[in-house]
Length: 325
Ligand SMILES: Nc1ncnc2c1ncn2[C@@H]1O[C@H](COP(=O)(O)OP(=O)(O)OP(=O)(O)O)[C@@H](O)[C@H]1O
Ligand SMILES: [Mg+2]
Image 1 (cartoon, protein in one colour):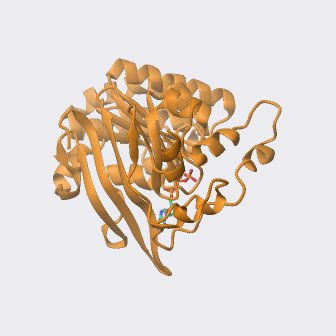
Image 2 (image 1 turned 90 degrees about the vertical axis):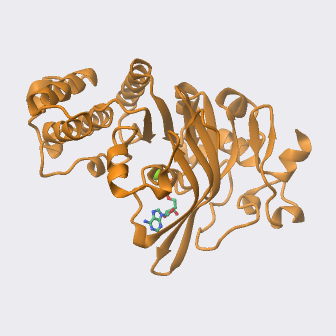
């Protein structure tokens, strides 16, 4: 584990104990994040992006989840942290903007009270000072009539407004790391861009590191320094975002780029670029999970996957890519 990394994840496995048997949601995932860096976690629906992010906050219920591997956050071993240390860390060292805004807010308290409570707890502020910080944050995320909005309940806000309020809540204690889980997906296109730009601006101001989850290649290029591409619970390719997305090594990444919606193309047509669909995760897949959809497939692909091949600050898990690079 390297000490200069804010996040260092090694061989993470997350298995859910489902009623119909285990779900192998995340398998052998390793990545890191340096100070000030933005990593885009890229991949289509169900590939394990949110499960990976929630693991970094230890948000999975212990009795239903088995987590193996190592997660170091700012030099601390997350998986052995006690509850008090864990709640001191959440929102302060690492904060998360959730895919579903309703997950972040409790519907029975006002938005202001929830931000105030977090600031009082983490920063030791008085209620009056915490209210000032909450107001400042709502203004910073450009919520109009911010003073009035402090006393609004989450359901009284529009989707775009609630998303901004959630960013204000996540950033109120100036965390070192922000986990942004598809923070703009639920918004319409113009609001998406505004929220994206706002996040980048706040990141610069606060000097935060960020993991940005998205299924949108264009968004990844816009926000990130590096990208990690996930497929069926594994990271199958990783590296500087421009290199990976201009010259993808893994056939899945190549397909994902082919599946990107270009202007004038309808979404259905674009998504058909990769035939077939991702596998069920009810079996532990040790071979290449993409093989059934891959036009380069050979018998070798059905054997247990080798470790990632690494070169030029990039990594890829495909024996064919490995032969070519
Ligand atoms: N609590 C749970 N119990 C059982 N299976 C789960 C649970 N949470 C997630 N999964 C499964 O784990 C897999 C990964 O889910 P995850 O939410 O991480 O996908 P995702 O990449 O975030 O997708 P999306 O882009 O749609 O948000 C899916 O197959 C999902 O059904
Ligand atoms: Mg998700």
